[in-house]
Length: 252
View 1 (cartoon, helix red, strand yellow):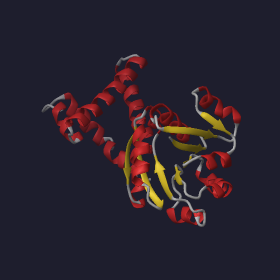
View 2 (cartoon, rainbow, N blue to C red):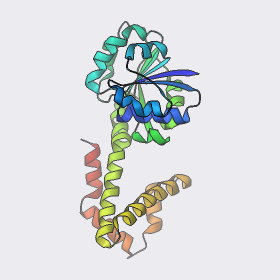
View 3 (tube, rainbow, N blue to C red):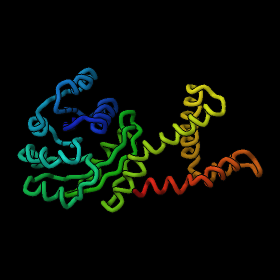
View 4 (cartoon, rainbow, N blue to C red):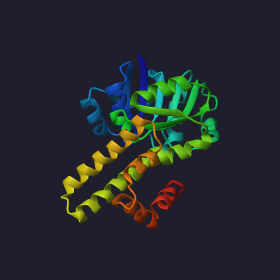
């Protein structure tokens, strides 16, 4: 049984905790937060909880830092004595590996990684990117996060790209869904009808392309007949800057 402590169960840490609790049958979890009231929903799910980061880190084999980036250093300072021989996974984006290495110097940590999942970890559908900070535990990291979705191990240079496409990408995809829903309402659907149609269409489109192993454009070509409504709609979106806007959003 793999003992995993998730220190900081906000939105992302909480999604990982819930996903692992539901899907990782060989994992024993302890979740910590700064406030007892936040722990209530995890306790209700049957997850062991604690307000003590140090004791949780001492107990665990794998420590997942789910705290905000500005809290990583102070939390690491407190749990340093518990890191020797452990695997540390930080969910905090934007901290260079050189900085993390400096904070972890002398701890004896076995391996450390920056791991960027997305909120769909909660239902086992995350797209997770991970990059080594120090040491080597690719198989462990991949096997752990593959239980809550799919995982790619990349170098640090590609980690930001992965974060924008897959983690921030959740918000980007849902912003499209909101826009399509509003368009559907303008065309005459009731809001609940439009939302149901948009969600099912997005899900169906992804599942179709994935099952066929095709490039998105190949499936687009199957829908666009010469002179038809679909191609007119696509061209209108491009004239309004659709593709350029998406790429610009990823490059911020």
